[in-house]
Amino acid sequence: MNKNLQKLFNAAQRQQRLGIGLMSGTSLDGLDIALCSFEGSGIDTQFRLLQFTTIPYTPDFKLAVQQVFAQKQVSLEQVTLLNAYIGSFHAKLILQALTIWKVPVAGVDFIASHGQTIYHAPKHQHQQPGYDSATLQIGDGDHIAIKTGIMTISDFRQKHIAVGGEGAPLALYGDVLLGSQPGEDRILLNIGGIANLTYLPGDSDLSKVICTDIGPGNTLIDAACREYFDQPFDEDSKIAYSGKVSETLLDALLYHPFFNETLPKTTGPELFNLSYVADAQQATRLLNIGKADLVATLSAFTGRAIAQFIRSNFTSGNIKLFASGGGARNPFIMEYLTNALPGVSIGNTDALGINPDAKEAILFALLGNEALCGEPLAIGTNPAVLMGKFSFAF
Ligand SMILES: Nc1ncnc2c1ncn2[C@@H]1O[C@H](COP(=O)(O)OP(=O)(O)OP(=O)(O)O)[C@@H](O)[C@H]1O
Ligand SMILES: CC(=O)N[C@H]1[C@@H]2OC[C@@H](O2)[C@@H](O)[C@@H]1O[C@H](C)C(=O)O
Image (cartoon, rainbow, N blue to C red):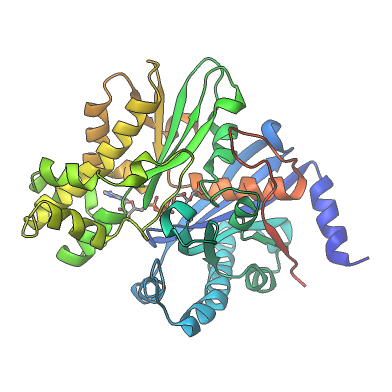
C-alpha cells in the first residue's frame, strides 16, 4: 500500500490530531497560521487553538500578488510563477512558526491551506453566458507538502462550486461549531476585505442557518488609503474621523444589484474596487470630494451595508453579534454598527474564546479535520460536502 495512504488512514482514526490552518485573505496583510488540536469531527469536534501568528507580507510580495489580484487581464506567466512561489513561501513561513513554537514537524498531522484568492467570479457577478460560478486560489498544496514534510489539504473552494455553491463563504462550517449556543440567536460577523456573516438561530435548527457575504469590509477603505494617503489602511480610523460622511455618495454606493441578490451570495474586490467608487462619484457629481471625506464615506458604506442587511433579515430582538477580522479593530465601523443597531448586543469573538484575528485560519484547520475524518454536514441551503484536495509529503 502507498505509505502515505496508511499515514492518512492512521491520522483519520487517531483520537487526537494536530493540524495547521492557513489563511491568506483578500486584504493581503499577511499569512495567518493557526495550530490546533482536534478530537472527533462534525458537530461534536473538540478543538483547541494552541498557537496563532500572522506573518506580515513584505511590500514586494504584496506588489507581486496585487499585479494579478482581482484583475481581468494579467500576465499568465506571473500567475504560473506565483502559484508555485506562494506554495513554497507559505511552507517557509510555516516552518519558521513551528521552530519558534518548538513544535516538531513530525507531530503535525496535516496542514489545511486556503491559498491566495486571485480571482472570484460568482455567476451573478461575471454574467458570462454559459459559464457557472468560478474562483481561483493559488499557492499549490504539493509545494507546501513537499517543503514542510506535512500532508497538506488545499483548494477547498472548488468542491463547493462543483456541487452548486459559489465557493464561499465557507465560514458557516466553522461558525456553527464555534459559535452556536442553544437559546441565543447569534450573528458571527467577519469584517475582512469583504464582510460576511453567519446567523446561528437559538433553536439550533441547522436548516435556518444563513451565511453570506454582505458587501465590502475593509477593501475599499484600504484601496483609498493606498491611493490617496500612501498608507496600507486607516489605522484606528484616524482618517475617517478627520473627514465627513457624504450621505449623497453613500446612497449611490449602496445602489447596486448585488445588494438585492438572493442569499447566499458572494463578492470580492473584482466588484468593490476604486472604479466602483468612481462610478458612484460620477453619478453624484462628487468626483472632487475631499480624500478624508471619501475614506469616512467608504467606512460608513461598510457599516451601513452591514446594518441594513441585519435590520432587514433578522427582525427578532435579542440578537448577539460577535465580530472578527481586521475590521473589528476599526473603531469607526464598530461605532457605526453600535449606533445603527440599537437592539443588537455587539462584541467580538473574544467573548466566545476565539481570537478574532485567528478565526478564519481556525476555520480552515477545522475544514481540514473534516476532510480527514468528517461526514458531509447539511447546513441551511449550503452544499453538504467535504472539501479539499490531499497532497502527500513524499
Ligand atoms: N487598528 C486598525 N484600525 C483600522 N483598521 C484595521 C486595524 N487593524 C486591522 N484593520 C483592517 O483589517 C484589515 C485586515 O483584515 P483581515 O486580516 O481580517 O483581512 P483578510 O483576512 O485579508 O480578509 P478576508 O477575510 O476578506 O479574506 C486591514 O487591511 C485593515 O483594513
Ligand atoms: C473567494 C474568497 O476568497 N472569499 C473570501 C473573502 O474574504 C471574506 C469573504 O470574501 C469570504 O467570502 C471568503 O472567505 C471566508 C474565509 C469564507 O469563505 O467564509
